[in-house]
Length: 545
Image 1 (cartoon, rainbow, N blue to C red):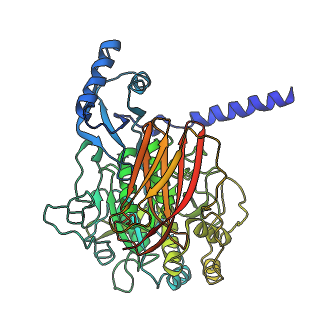
Image 2 (image 1 turned 30 degrees about the horizontal axis):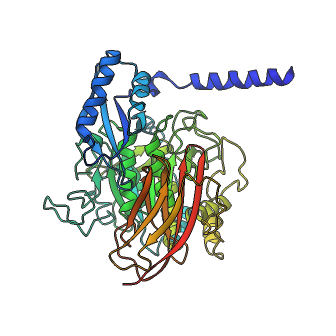
Image 3 (image 1 turned 60 degrees about the vertical axis):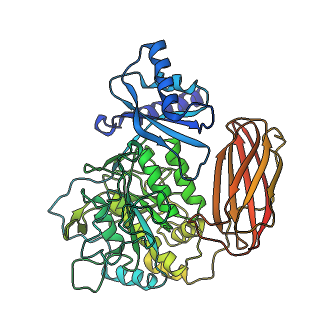
């Protein structure tokens, strides 16, 4: 009886906790995203297929107010066999009902609302301007670390004022692109010299102009990488870092998870070492989770803010496993009143009244877990400039060992603050053994219907590339092929959804940035899954030009 009573108390607590999401924190959903197999040959083309689905829904349920966007059929850069179609919600309709109806169509893999996100900031209080987020000694400690290899930090946010006097020399510039209205580097984005603007990408409204018209992204970039010793303004945590301006949020700090997913994939493909995500929402789309995992699998560190709800309700992407999640604390190692917390919280950093940059060569204070997130991104950039071979798990391990509570004290404080002197000491120790590197030997499942007759050909192969071929009895099984070099580093990742029968996946012998790889042996790991079934195999292919 006592045990039953205990369960009831827990359920009541969870229910009450959900109530504490204010109505103002629940954002409107204005579109649906439908994932389908890419159609070719005599099958319906995307626009006709979208119209076909709509006509059937309207005829059977008399539902109106749902329409496909022009130029809204997207193909994820890393998934060759699927495409995404975006449908606008133009009136009050039963979203759940429409989602279920769309799932019943052939070729449809998934349907989900395009959840929104918003920046994590709180109103400024001008009477607390004497608080600094790092002491002078702390700055000296971190600057000792960050004087080695240049590191690229992608600020996926409202954009960056890349003409700011404190940032103009530290802005990532795509040297393979020029301003001529042509996609010079062949990455699918025209004139992306200073990053890219993914706001409205799912609606075909994207542009190369990633300038910040809000201020949030510029403030974060200043915390991370503002210049030092230039007799001007402030100095960043890592003044040698390069910041990549990627915008997907509007002038109000609002955006969608689909645009965020595209922005994150772009950051990875452009060679970012770290992705700063100072935004989120308490619901998660599959394509945002996939994009974050794509970054983590590619060896990119993702740092995200836990949110400003003062609640233990998980927000995303901070709560996705593998992400470094950051909350705000004060000088007494206590949680700030606005900061969220919970089992997903990793570290704390100062977040109240942080002084940094604003667009148009301006400066000012802002508060929120967004700022705390940027501080940790700055730390990580300094770490990687000293230890560029560190993996994501090694970065997290060193941060934990350098924190206030290496054994994690509780859900309100996580591991606490990162002690910079201890961080400096730990970085100078022997390299950590990698504990999470994928093995090349797997215990295979008995799910023979998933995968059979796997081979890659030709092998060895030349600059013309090689093809992975296999047989499967299932439609829509998800296949990931990870390719590693002889040092265990992930060099490329191929993703595809299967069709029943024989399938082929081509690899051009290049890395994920499109650079030609050197001759030698490469390990591949194939992971195929469908529903509760899963199978993994591995092998070796050799490149000889």
